[in-house]
Amino acid sequence: MKKITIISQYWEPDMNGDVVRLKNYIGLLLKLGFEITLITAIPNYLTYKRKEAKVGIEKRERLKIIRLWMPKLVHKGLASRLILYLSFMIFASLPTLIYARKSYIWAFSQRVFSTLAALPAKLLFRVKLYSDITDIWPEALINTDYASEDSLFYKMGRFIAKIAYRSSDKILVLSEDMKKQIANRYGLDPKRVFVLENFMPSREIDLPNMNGELRVLYYGNLGKNYDFDAIIELAKELKREKIKFIIIGSGEMEYEIIENIKRNGLTNVEFINRMLEEAKLKAFVKDAQVLILPMRHQVIEDVSFPTKLIDYLHSGRVILYIGNGYCLRLINGHKAGIGLDKFEKEKLVDFLRTLSNNAEMIKEYATNAKRLAEEMFSEMNATAKIKILFQ
Image (cartoon, rainbow, N blue to C red; front, top):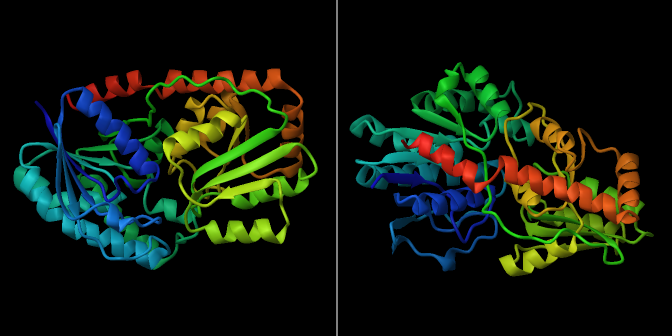
């Protein structure tokens, strides 16, 4: 039985894109007979639920979860984030030394810090270290305005990232475009970079129907990498029509969204500022015809890939994507909805108005989205790649 030690700062009940990816792959690895040790932290992400988990060891069938203490800081702002990342890196190093002696190490979130936590074990025991890079760091910080390319912080981040990337036996990324980016930027042999796409377990969902109004839904993290002003602008323009916007989630942009809705008197925007239980969220997805993903413009393209897009595609809904790079080409190339490289209000308003009067158009885009998910982001494809990776 093959053993894998996974290092991830985030795990349930915390929920973000990394946790969704990790949860799906842990489920797949367990199906394939792997034995897993997950080194993680007590909840420390945004919604902060410290009472829901304690420091210690939790044992399940072929899955051991080791919870580490973390400082009581809100996951917001650069300084607090760095303290949390560095704390986890330091605390995770010792249990990795204890548990990873005869196993693969899969360094998950938070990015290069989990890789650095694994380096002592790799050097001592010569185990294989795989680094999971869902955002190429620190380049991703430029796209969210946390750093600039000429800043000392960015240059220090590049130095740390080089150590992490060049110390890894394999670097796992989410697309071929990310593979090219990280290989070129860090002078890596492309053979060491392995594309392991996100996937979602297959599920049966009815295609959307018109229920008297067009419902446009966003759900997930309310982070700085998303452009929620775009949703507000669309809602302002369409407030007299039978088109409703729903935003569900939690995160550091929450207050700004609330203020924008109040300031503009938008009665056609419903905002639920918390993550919903799976069954309740499914009900909102079922009633929606359009799922919107408004990304901030990437100064450096394809240094990340939003996990949420895979979930959106599997939901079989029309995708409205704002952003540049690979995801834009994917949506437009497969006619899974509409993708624009920047916010163009008139085009999007016209698109939504057309959709609201055309049920067949909605079903055509939704069918294409579901087909794309099954062709490129399926459990079958993920299983084949895991077998190659851990052969």
